Length: 317
View (tube, rainbow, N blue to C red):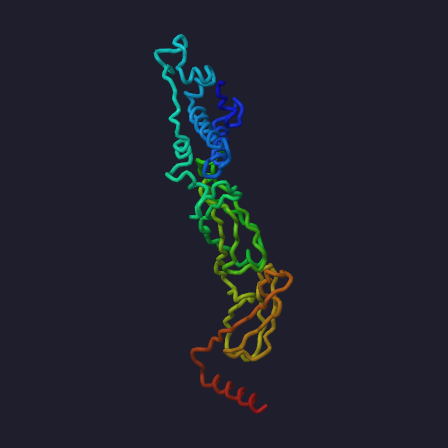
């Protein structure tokens, strides 16, 4: 009875090269003697090797499609030949493991599937194919303080290796990763995209991890959930009081009166005007205004006298 190599691979005669590879990959693993000890599995495994050896080769496949097994193994009839083309006889080498290794690569035919050292158990179904995962791929995501205050959406393009339909070869493709930045995220926040690294037949793709880095801001320094605003003031303002206008990250202008005497350790705290909390963006930290008092380089005798008089009367009160 003539062999039906398409039936052996469970595909039809119009199957593409990718479909032939996919079918062999699935069935060769299923019926490999190290995974399948059932009666007839070794014969099926050998037949799969021969079927793939023929159908994956355009020349052998063309002969088989036109003349069948007899034409393939006995040579095509002379009247169909042209200058000796396709006249040689085909004989399968009889080593299905060789075909398996040529397909998957490497000396260990199961290197693509088993990466631990546990021995395979004959006659025991292997329900899970264990693959190791590559270490995470970490990249820095730089955001402005405004981005972290208001929240935003960032799109990051990555290039990664992707398996082709045959499950063995691969190519480089671009992919866009979308990051929804939440208000209040901090420096060091990690955004994980599971299994978006390079694909390969012998491994689980790595996770891609974006680590938030905050760009410096011209007005504010972030301290946890608080915003620090540094202001230079004159000695006169430090002693007599003044009002300061502070622009906010959401576009408002805060007019803040300073009625206390400002000394080097003095800070003005404006409650609820800091960064939003990442757990609850309706809650905020504080705005903390710090002061750098600028002293005059010199004073006239009259000015010194007036200052002494004012300070002396202030102490007496």
